[in-house]
Length: 165
Image 1 (cartoon, rainbow, N blue to C red):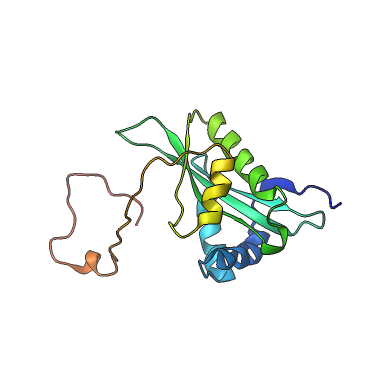
Image 2: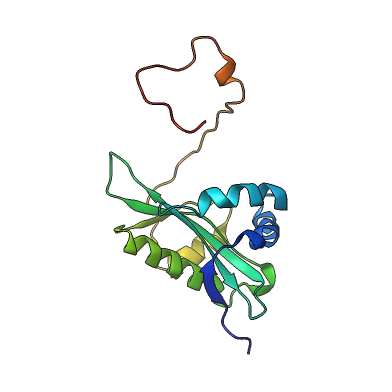
């Protein structure tokens, strides 16, 4: 029986493997893209990327958690992504990653964790139910590409402080 994977923080050198796993999840991502994104998700207390590492140190799964603050509700955390390598599924790795993410959230004062999954991911729905999650609501997500908005005349306002751009 293989040893249980260690749960640790994601490292820059994990980028290529995390990208492979993201692609397995259905989000094709290059190693370069993931390497560029990872430092923005590991440098503060508002977000974390945890990795399940095999005995040889190879990432076999990851969970990305973010704190969610709102005027409408108490602080919660949200699972932004959770993936276990196809060869390691149904062995408890996902449950261990999720538990580590939940512990991270609880340590930051969150009293709940949210997760969204595509309606077609029935296996994921069953997994989250087994972990004690309940269906809260069904939503639609809309997207608007912002590629040209900064070049429009009269963009912005001087009434609020500028943020990261």
